[in-house]
Image 1 (cartoon, rainbow, N blue to C red):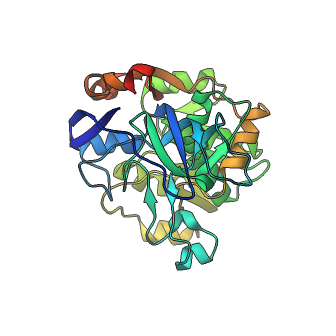
Image 2 (image 1 turned 45 degrees about the vertical axis):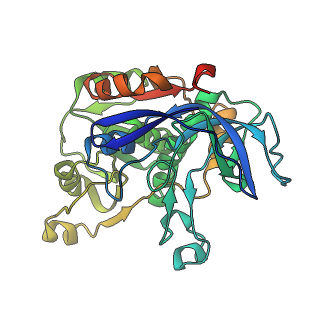
Image 3 (image 1 turned 60 degrees about the horizontal axis):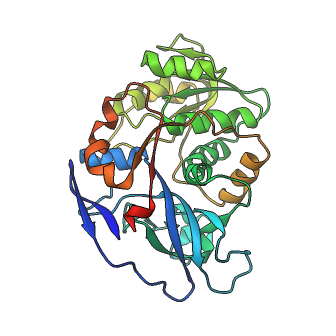
Length: 327
């Protein structure tokens, strides 16, 4: 089978390997869709924390089960699933608190271990979440949506509160949808005009620079240190600031301003127990995935097309399709 390996920053290599075999307790799945995440783009650029090379990328996956051991989730041959790519130890302090997304030894497919840029994969059954209604594209989007869903849940935002989302990338869009679903009034700060235009078409008001209007909750989804530092100025007194984006390095803030407003600052990492609820919300039409995918490529096109993604001014989500010729 064809597999695409990120050998080092800026360099993919196409390889051919025999399909793996499923271990006890694991399902053997056919990968059909692979969403391209900001993590993948940062890894390609050499700027992703906690990352080593070489690595098979791919953690936003829409798959079809080929075989599965007996289970109580109704997962069997032919079942279509989203893959929850987080593997936790189950016994550290975070896991004991039922917060496996911040497990001390967390491993993420495509980041800390080999991911899904290949036609076949062996996956623990408990990481599969099925749907009889969602398309393979939608299933591959569940992981990205989970990042936004978890950030909104962490914030505790509720009906009638105002949110400012900084950054109109995929994570910012996911945060926006779930904040709206929670009843919040949402605005977005985005410096790039094409992205502002895209977001406004979805009915979300945008600003190109901070206008002095403070918000109950600010979600920073930029992964940019300057933007993250500036985000400390945006919450109202008693407000909350949630860092969804991740940056490699330190950020600083003005302490008197921070104390004067008695801000609550949170980080939000991955998602946590969110996949079933997200799938249900998409199935019921409460989360709309139709605007997301703006670029497609085949698995064999990744080495040539992936490096060009950053040049696309209107890129929201690129989707990789694994075809029969890749097997």
